[in-house]
Length: 429
Ligand code: GLU
Image 1 (cartoon, rainbow, N blue to C red):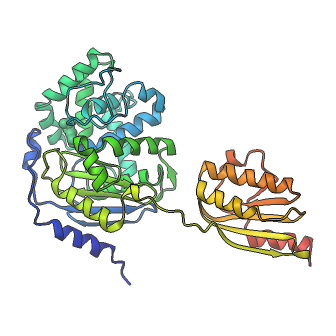
Image 2 (image 1 turned 45 degrees about the vertical axis):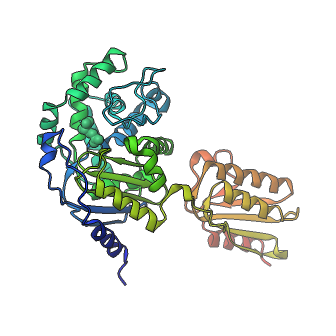
Image 3 (image 1 turned 120 degrees about the vertical axis):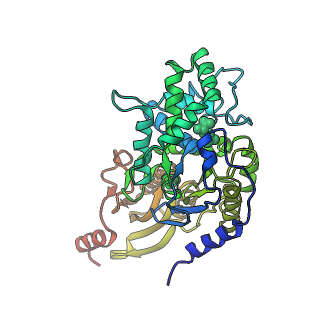
């Protein structure tokens, strides 16, 4: 059997093929020579599988889609509060290149508009031979899983007409948000926007954000969870410029567009999406890209506000074995967040006080949230107070060292069958 996902994507692509609305961006002269017919979609699941169709090998410049990743890099290096002291998180409702600051704090309103993005660029660490833009290129290459390069022609073309971004730079220097020569920073920001990507690269980048900062293919944690969450929150409220509200209601996922015609979207916990089509609507977002994203969101039920109900099946199996049936095994399954933990504790409430051994097997738990860890061990303590001996089996090591601290006698990193064999041998029927 062949998965129908590519056929579905092809269907969406052919449906919007006839849409010829929009204009090529021309304030960067080089972008005006792009082929307006190019069209591509890519979808990357959080386990690293990628589907792509159309002009999926065509490279174009990342432009404003670099902003969330530059923000991520700044957060990674300085921490959230230090970055918040320089750039706010309020949607501006203004055009991307508005020359404005937050009236009260005299800071750029958010990192997704140019004033905020130029500031964020200045927060990327710089070393002797590694410029900020180069630092970001390396970071994006890691996220994309291949070596990316700069489009020097687009860079030069934007430099030649960068008057507006330079005015923003001077404004930021005047109020002290930028502490260095604004020309260097603005040039670096423009270089960052000229990194070349394909929809596949973008979907891979988006899927790392969807996966809370973890890159499935390499198993590497590239961003901390709180950084990924911060980036996605800002994309959600500010990513689509002055069309952010429209986007949130009709598509409903964190996203970012770029003037070369790309849009990336992230459905947390599920997929990273990317589309490319160079003609832009009046807000500067890809016209066909928006149509595709709306279609995908509708067909695939992506809208965040629809929420994903809990699977409601935390206990996959419960049975008693051993002498006098004194070993009670709970095989748990799925995700342990608040809803599932509450359900588990409600089920455990029915265990009558006794000297039984209760085994909580985490082998099939795919994700455990901090609140899940807290509630699980609170349940363990209460079962112990009732006289039980409690063992948490963590064969896959889903609990971190930190979470196991002080619980060495409770958490056993062993497979359920092996563990049962051992205890049943010691204490046969
Ligand atoms: N380099 C472009 C600029 O700063 C990016 C704008 C965009 O993609 O929206 O004007």
